[in-house]
Image 1 (cartoon, one colour):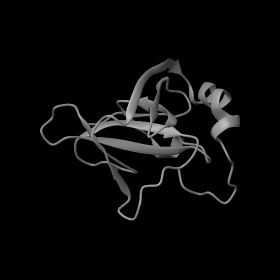
Image 2 (cartoon, rainbow, N blue to C red):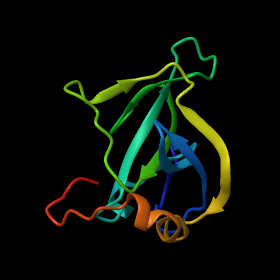
Image 3 (cartoon, one colour):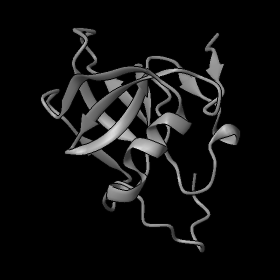
Image 4 (cartoon, helix red, strand yellow):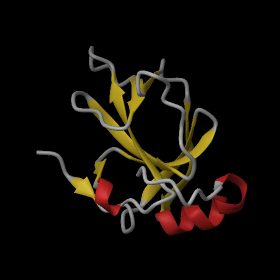
Length: 120
């Protein structure tokens, strides 16, 4: 059974993925806890279970490796996913951040509110 965490109360590790600042957890994030203007994605690991991040999508059903939040949407292309080789993630930027901490840190540089945005 997967454990879902609340995006607004969880503490995360700050990473950079595809050059975009993000908050990472190895757990699944409850999509209903993600506020508008914040984007939730999940990462799938390789089928050989070597711990290599291999795909980003809105929802990963099999081989869930982790979840992350960004303040701007990623372009998932026509297939709704981005394939990876594992080198697209930079770790160790900051740790133990709340979503509110992250928003204060990055809002001015990366957050462009779109009031028509309904996707979480």
